[in-house]
Image (cartoon, rainbow, N blue to C red; front, side):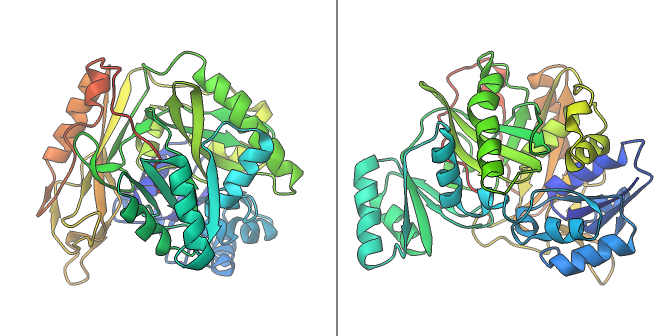
Length: 429
């Protein structure tokens, strides 16, 4: 199988490692990829949000399977263009990807399907006039903490959760359209579901850490770490979510003429009333992908190909490695604000290091930072404690001026503390 992987972040590096390890894959191409992915794949340049360019590249490289990593190409209709060339593609259509591309659309789907989620109000032109008044009314109705989400894709910076009403109003005013939601109290869970539109297979639930600082302090980010499995998750939760969330959502999308085939990311808050959906994404999440795929024994390319060809019902049951996985993200100076780039990176060539915002300096090929979340270390162990030790040993060996990372990823879970911080409303990243 010749596989073309689109994207160049940490999620795509984790996917590349999984795809390259599948014996069915004899050639892996990544576009545009990154220096870490280059170790296991041929890199090709392409504008990944240009459907025609991606489809042409898929034809040129004679891809048997195209795997779309990020959300922007999916919303742009890249999967549709690839399939129009007769090439198998893992990723939803542009119409189905609206489940991530528009939070208002996602809420409408959830409400129509009876999916348990937060109450919400969608508001257009929220910065002035009637729109601003409606935002203020919704904030008063739901109360603090205030949850305000940019309706569209915002590269992990579209959500504000705050007790400061002025900050909530300011964020709303900076957007063209927003969704104001009630706060959902409870630990956050990310559930990835591989689906062909009918059959759906859940992967291991994971938990990520959105805030920049230890103890879930500071602003939201695209994700500063993750771990799996979740020993504290009540038994039967995944089955409940599949029955009350996933299958009703897939049925609703089919009924709207937009069947969803690909990876449905279900962001959950485990509240006292049970699981509630915070958001849907139309692709694997980052950094949860790093820990989930590190524990997956089932060959990845075969699984994704089955979903993309509508044959998932005949796929063998998924197999998982024993033990646990922990990922710790290393970010550049200034992140999640204006991130500094161009700093030299050392110690990033070891197994377990996942590249995200890295590049080769044109002058001499030196590895340098090229984004906010630069790389991550994924550790495996017989339990969370040993996996944490392995992950932190990896990031401690990375040299990057101004580097910042959290010291408490999976710490409470590893200590069997069930009173974990109450996380809410992950960003769209």
